[in-house]
Amino acid sequence: MLETSKEQWTARFVEVIARASTQLPPDVVEALRQGRQREDEGSLAARALDTVLRNIELAAGNWQPICQDTGTPLVWIHHPVGMSTRLLTGAFEEAVRQATARQLLRPNAVDPLLDKNTGNGAAPGIPTVHCEEWDEAGVEVRMMLKGGGCENVGAQYTLPNPALKADRNLEGVKRCILDAIYKAQGKGCSPGIIGACFGGDRGSGFLESKRQLLRRLDDRNPIPELDAMEREIFDKANQLGIGPMGFGGSTTVLGVKIGYLGRLPASYFVSVSYMCWANRRAGAFFAPDGSVTWLE
Image 1 (cartoon, one colour):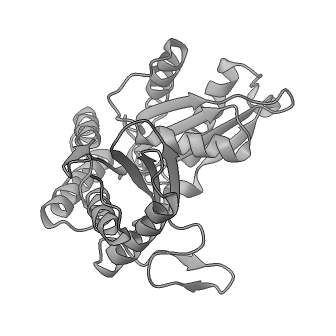
Image 2 (cartoon, helix red, strand yellow):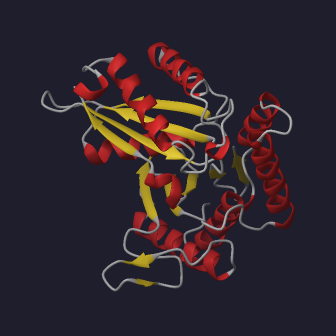
């Protein structure tokens, strides 16, 4: 039987947060290593990636946060029918407070009304918890830590966009995504990972663009048109010459992930979420027998 107490779920969620904050997923580390191999020896790009890879190694070995900006925790929880979403939401919020007290997260939440840091990592809307019912007997948790610097260079476009000569079609979508990457330059701690969504409204489009960032970098989009778009934008973005931290080079993005939503006739949004190289995501499946499977 699955646990039913808030305290038990809080303890489990703290473990997930700890992994997200300190252990970068293997596919992200491999993408950074491949990027390093593409850069010229002695270049600023190569040095930047050497520093990044060394930082990842130190953080993982010591179970310490990869970055001083531990970001906004965003989590999607799939749960069986009848399980309390209030319990799960409350448990994750408490897990953020406990993880902050244990220095797995930085006191990173500011109440803008009072203009004061709350001191415990939580504030209205932080963390962001999405609970979704499913038919499985266990609970799946997938989360990310979204840094503020990379959040600043996210973008949303409306089509048509005369400045980009972007119409309401897939070519127009591509132009918007590439424009967002170009405008970011080295800001947002490149090489970045791009999550994008076309369609939806302003809110749902951004949410889906962030959800795309939960995908592995080495996966393939099951929709052929989007798979081709992801690979094309990845190739073109890495020819922009922006490179790691904006120092120039061949590694501007590590991956491009694109989804779509239905839209109204009057609106055509393209939402772009930029994730820094520290793509801190973690996942776990909690089975009814109490076992845990860690998800990459």
